[in-house]
Length: 144
Image (cartoon, rainbow, N blue to C red; front, side, top):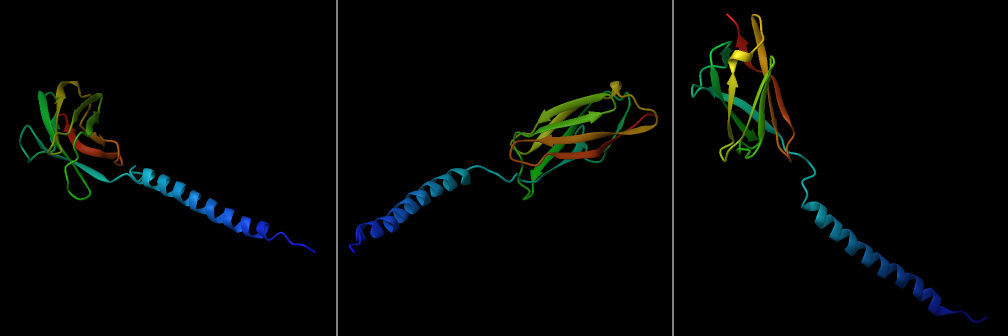
């Protein structure tokens, strides 16, 4: 009997060539995907003052327009630039964007609050590439 030895050599050689081509394609996909941030980072937002005073986190109803300063940082303490900061609740809302220092200035009109006794405003910060931050008790509002 005559055996065709070229058929036995051809199959392993094709497998080697297809494996090399497949690995090159896989490497190209991994490099492309590596540039995309698939896991969002953690950030934190905090109110650092009202009307340039760092001592209060309480707003009085009908006390005029207040400038609330908010700082947004990532898990390493680096300022987050361009995050949208929203303070809302009690039939009121206001927003701002963080600057190069991670600070946002949000103007809140206290005349439109609807609250009897006391209530709280929520703080939300959002930007692409980060987990959304929310604090349901960011600012206390009192009506005396």
